[in-house]
Length: 211
Ligand SMILES: [Zn+2]
Image (cartoon, rainbow, N blue to C red; front, side, top):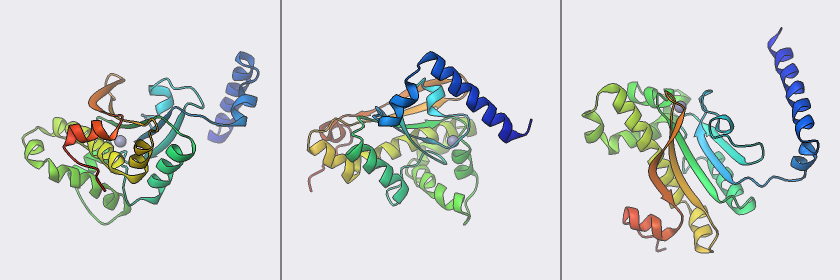
């Protein structure tokens, strides 16, 4: 069966099954969305958040790109964050990286001027900041550790962003969390990165948000 026919057949059978299980499901989700989580993850086909975190339809607002980067100069990322916090009032922001990430491997292996190379410069900045630790590791551990450090860097970018800082300042509940997905056993792993307020962030990094 051609690809599109197969996909549409699957879609129709899925929609029929959902209606059999919950007759009002589509009526209910067509009214509005009130997701609990903004998920910033890698575009890798193996790490879709709904499946690996068991999140139901309507509960997760998703932003994905190569190597799960929250770039402070990327209008796309900023628009997603602003909409998630200011309009949807989403309380949880998860940055999820993963081991054996092609983007991380590419950042370690070469650089260049193609769009993906330029995008991955942001991972190379993370590598350079931690080069003394990373150089001591064998290749597999180095790439997995860089995936973790990259998550931390993106959590850092989000916590420092004005959109989050303003939300914290007005008392809005926003948790910024960093996770890594282990593609070898299917488990999500915590990285000790969870910040629920300006105070928590400052206490961990010794930074001040004073304007
Ligand atoms: Zn990846």
